[in-house]
Amino acid sequence: MKGISVTDLLDNTTYEQRRGEFRSRIIGIKKDRGINLGPILRLVFENRDTLLFQIQEMLFVERTSDPEKRAEEVEIYRTMLPSRSTLSATLMIEITEESRIRDTLDTLQGLDRGPYLHLVFAGERVTASFEPDRSTDEKLSSVHYLTFGFTEKQRSMFLGLSEGEKVMLLSDHPRYSAMAVLSPATIRSLRDDLSDD
Image 1: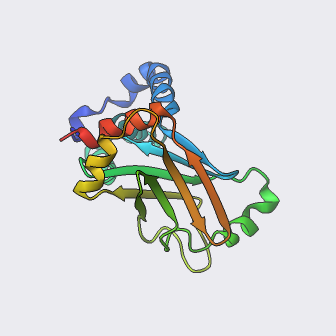
Image 2: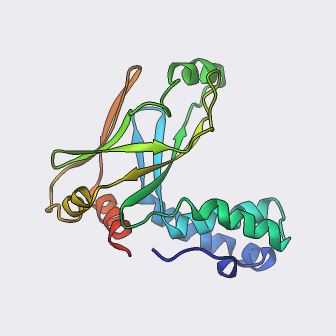
């Protein structure tokens, strides 16, 4: 997949003028890349477009024009690009009732430390690796960045899935068991990520 560089970014004034058009396009892209896993987990698979949008939004909201700071943001997000053997995703814990936030996050402690989140297909299981240091023993973050690393065999099997074969996203955390079946459109979108060199 093509990388992201500072030269791909618009200045904040130009971005503000085109922001609506960018947002509409990304909403369309994310429609096929977002999955609800049970009642409170939402996972969005990232690609170059979604990450470039996140960088532009961050720079725009924070009114960042300093070239060094812009380069730093690009460097942070560049590590989240998918590759020919890795899918990249953002996991959000979505709790709408403020009174339940603390208890729910406590219940999910360890989600980011154990092998609890998987892509399952054709008898294969690809386990998520979470970005370290986003949580502590006392507090679980509500947003996580993670990757699914495929072996060459798993990549070939995923790319070779026939129409109608199921791909599932699975949580087997001791206190949060959930499963979601990926849509054909989502599978096609993820295949594009893995097929890029």
